[in-house]
Image (cartoon, rainbow over all chains, first blue to last red; front, side, top):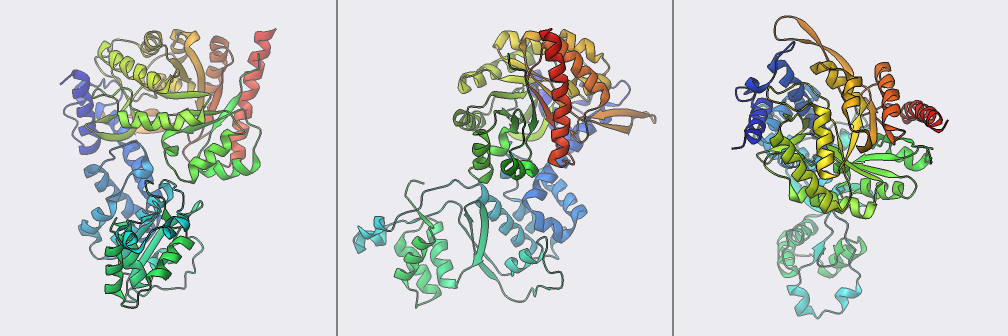
Amino acid sequence: MSPLRELQAGFRAALLADDERAVAPHVVDDGLSASARLAVYRHHVFASLTAALEATYPVVCRLVDRRFFGWVADQYVRVRPPAGPCLFEYGADFPEFVAAFPACAHLPWLADVARLEWAMNAALHAPAAPALEPEALRALDPAALARLTLRLDPSVALLASRWPVDAIWRANQAGANLTVTVDLDAGGASLEVRRVDDDVVFRALPPATFAFRAALAAGRTLEDAVEQALDADPAFDLAGEIRALLDERLLVEPGH
Amino acid sequence: MHPAGCGIGLRAPHVTEVLERRPAIAWLEVHAENYMTSGPARRALERLRADYPVSVHGVGLSLGSAEGLDAAHLERLAQLVEPLEPARVSEHLSWSVTGGTYLNHLLPLPYTEEALEVLCAHVTRAQERLGRRVLVENPSGYLRFRHSPIPEPEFLSALARRTGCGLLCDVNNVYVTCANLGGDAAAWLDALDPSTVGEIHLAGHAVNDVDGGDAARRTILIDDHGSPVADAVWRLFEGALGRFGTIPTLIEWDTDVPPLEVLLAEAAKAQRRLDTANDVAAA
């Protein structure tokens, strides 16, 4: 390994694992110890990445309070530091980390709140794609239609939770009515998250609509998606559902 | 010649207000990585670009990484820069990536021939892909490496000479580095090749009292961009203008971001000094 490469690997160990053995001997420690100097850099790395996670997960942070969140973020940064410099892309697996974090075990709904926040963050930054015009489907014969894979808008995420994460999220927004309590036993939520113009929105979907759109979002053919929807509700109305997708400008041209 | 103007570093809390008010400000600088998105931030930047000169300031290219440049990230930078056609593109004399991990800080380099070769190769590659000159900024230093034989301003000047890149002189960083590592800030500026400097940055710093590791307390300056520009840095800036000429200058504020008015007032203070220096040069 080149000296510079070795030095940089040692710097990383000092910052992320508190292991200064490789780098400290290379640092001039006049006036201030090598350790105190490295601590300046370490502090910035953890403070800035914690701030980035807090920006993406504000409701999780509010739910557990900032000091506890800072501690969870600290542990997360150590084992899952960013792989790239765009910080709005950092923290995709933070929900899984929270789900497995022993100190969060008494908050079983917390990871799903984090999943909702990640879906909202991803929707905000998703590529824009032109909506499909209804004429594009009209030209197809029914057999071709069944084999078709309809593409949903890239910002769309379908998220199911056994907890009322939508109510939890809303109760923790600035200006929310503090007298409202969330009944955790009120049942789960089947949510569709998407970007509309510059805003990210979510709403609850009926079971068959959710199953249908979730299958499409997963890249399944129309035939498969209908099967999923009919399992959820035998009265599933395909024509009405496709019209709704077009009306909501949720279908996009293939290739986007 | 039209006198150089003072711009502001555009931060998220001010974007909407700048879009609505369109304040009289010479130019805007944005951090490249915040706009490598298809979200609303990107569209806001495109709208602002129609009314203001914009400079793209990268913080994540990690020009000093020994393991090589992240080609995918350079490509994303090119995709941002090409349609935007910014007035300037800049990056840092630092590294952030090792072992595929991005450490989210402008980390220090030993100033060796080996590091200079790494920097030269990466700056050349970036300039080739972007099809334009890049400015490289001096970092704030909190440590020195034992083996670092080339003084920082000479290292930067050599980088500019070998690659044709320009330099972004952050006057606050010069002050912070010299205070933390020992050195004379005015002499540091004198050692820089003035013909290479294409932009100046100004910001505030924090003065922290820390445990020196030997039971004594020491002062360390932290480049936190969280306060007005210090008096000593204003004086250094005036000296820099005398030496480099009046060049585009930027006020940055990143911690405890104040109301836009405060930032604009700080930029007006820099603008007055630019105008004075320009009058002196014209006389």
